[in-house]
Image (cartoon, rainbow, N blue to C red):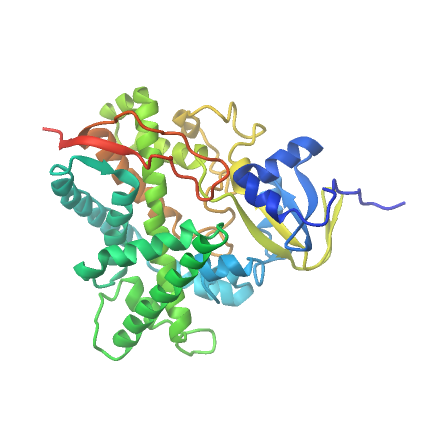
Length: 419
């Protein structure tokens, strides 16, 4: 008798269009239908496995069982990730490149990031007080662009701020799109890679001298395992892997504003906060609202898990959003409840809005600390330091469109500093 079970299987030739149509809910819809946290389907013409849950995350981030090389679809590589970036590496090459990213995540570096973020919020408020209305998502992208550049050591040219903010945004806004919107994202990546590549060449030629503790400096001079400088194209991709995710925090900032508006009782709790409750709200925003729907890897070698056989090279998707809403881990997961993080067990596999596993040896996002610190500063401004009106508007958000953003992009009026 076989010691493996038949995995639940979605019938049909290909279900890529269904994934696009259902977005964040594609995997969880089928898990509910099969009454299983795992099933087999076909995506992009090939067999694929989809999984949900803490146990699934633990095996997914086992580097002996899964690899990232060639796991991401080409359309995602050409918009979101870029070619030959850290996300597509495995083994010693990945660990060595990941150490480059972790080197700028020191306590000193993160404190500097917080100071930069506060400064940029203050500068932006001067402008907002003069505006009839503020479209928060668009404004937040601009704030985050300036934060990202200053922290990464990238010179800011005022006449190009709008251009590069737009192009960096297009990379993550277009990754799941088709047609013209997708090609807009591809073109945006090409333009940003050219710009950052030229900056790296200027650093190496001594024409631009960013601070030594910044990403632009360290990535420009990083050497691979053979002792060679990264080629300009790869170094540019990795600098963009700092800039683009920070700009993408604008999505979370919109959801912070939505939470502050929808749950005013949570805002009140911040008034006597020592910082702990702000951390809990930020974590709940990251858990509760949709951000990135799933991540992919390929099976490294044949193995059996949970009674199911995984065959080498099979594409496997781990559902991040559904894992963060797994009722087996999160009591009443559809309720916004920051206090659930008061006694959270800090598991690297149950709470995975930006991936799971180990930071240094695994593929958990190196910039997660960056996201949290920037969000805490932004929460402080939106909840404590500003007065504003939220006029009637469409505050709903789609569970199909990736990434999901409140439809109105959060319109604020009569913005003033609190006195």
